[in-house]
Image 1: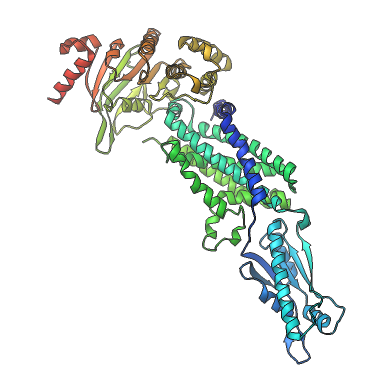
Image 2 (image 1 turned 60 degrees about the horizontal axis):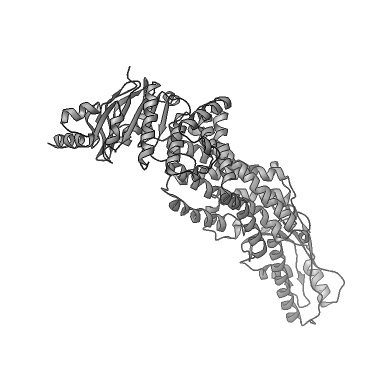
Amino acid sequence: MKIQRTLAFTKRALMQFRHDRRTLAFVLVMPLLMMLVFGYAFGGDPTGLDIAIVNLDTGVTTPIGTNISFAESIIDNLDDETYVLHYYDNREGAKADLQEAELWAVFYFPADFSTNLFASFAMNGTETSTIEVDIDDSNPNLAASIMQGLQEALMETQEDITTELGLPEDTPPISIQTTNEYGDTQDIEFIDYFAPGIVSYSIMMVTVMISIILFVGERREGTLQRLLVSPASETEIVVGYALAFGVIGLIQSVVILSAAILIFDVNIAGSIFLALFVVILLAIGHQGLGILLSSAANNELQAIQFIPLIVFPSVLLAGLFWPVESIPSFLQPLAYFIPLKYGIDAERSIMLRGWGIAEVWPEITILILFAILTLTASILLLKRRK
Amino acid sequence: MNVIETSDICKNYGDLKAVNNLNLSVSQGEVYGLLGPNGSGKTTAIKLLTGLILSTSGTATVLGHKIPSKSVLNDIGYMPQETAIYLDNTVHENILLFGEIYGLTRDQIAEREVELLDFVELSERRDSIASTLSGGMKHRLSLACAMIHRPKLLFLDEPTVGVDPELRATFWEYFEEMARDNITVLITTHYMDEASHCSRVGLMRSGQLIAEDEPERLKASTGTASLEDAFLALARRDVE
């Protein structure tokens, strides 16, 4: 592979964008527009959130001799559509899984929860009953939903208790003490959660669309035939274009992230360079995918028919709007075959959790493998002679 | 040694014999015309000779290399039927890309660009985006791109399709000039009349070469006044 020839393709593709103002505008404005539209407009009710329950509550024996656990009542009142409950014996184990991002929150009920609650209700005691919540607030939308769901369960339980025990309506509420895993939920807005997804999604979409159309054009206009009868190797052609798309992806990301920071005041907790590196990997891998798909299309019209095939699974299953855990379980395995999922996961971890390469290497490895796979397949496809 | 030599080369697509036992011999400095109606196998023959497709049977040797061969690609130029230029790039950027592909230095490309744009009369349009050129200009740019590396052998697939008569005449002048520089040209066309410019022509029908000779001798042997009539006479004879 000669670097001069490889870069000749990179340069050609970049020059094309310079001359084709409309496509250049598409490349730059479309992601920006998506960021604005989704950023302002989107909202939703998440479901299937993994929550740890650490229930050490020993319950309380009432004057009539029965043992009541208020913690059990609250847990029973948790909405089973919103939450998937996992039971832990101790708070440390649950917190460890929270830090590994396997859980969204830990609800901790101390041993004296029912005792104190009963004392404050029935005997006007001063002890307070507290549910301690450790929460992954990297997704502020989910964090808010989790807390709202817990509040609803508490109110329901409290109503039951006051009715059952004939207590006055103004009984003090059960308090919740929250510990945020990644800072203060108040500071992280939905847009912070959304920005990394939009960066990844826009780069993926623009790269696939343009590379499909570009390579269909190469075939239809005869330039590809001409290249294949030149000393340029298939590897030089594919890598040359991959570099061009890497550069374009980088420029796009800078535009989107600048908008996110300047307009929406998005926080970036981790390394911006690592975030950009993930975007470049996404662009290169999807450029390869674009070349592969282009071989199945005879013209641009057929080419754009592939777009919904790529767009819808990515939008719905890759965790762009809601976590993979909240999509129907029979669809969940599909999500793991969508490379965008790993891009979104990595970007969120870097930008919201402040994670570095030590934590996001599995996603980065998958994206590198995806890029190698699609580029190798593209090279083999071009090498194939019938 | 012949520049192109094929031996019973065949290309089948299912039951269709696109090229059927083609035996070609083209020597250096010839302008060899492959003539025939649409679908007669001319383009398939060029694709076989350039290694774009693989033969079903038979062999082909180009500039001493058995095809397909990577090493021959530096010495051949190819102008496909389509315009095959990057329409969103300028004339200069197209020339630059193909120059770099063939490993020319910046200075060599700059020197060759001046010569070629002068040759195809596009010097004034050096910085124009290719899509803004007229159809004829695009064809001329395509020819310039095929010649950037001074190939020893040029494959031109229907280079005059959709080109106005004046430009067609200019093109044939180019090809004759190349032959004078000892460049071998294999050209396909279905315009029978213009093939009289070739030093030799091969008449193709249904994937087969039905006759091959100098244009004047073909006309004489069939007792016809034009190559078109010669082709029709030979085609009838072939059917009988």
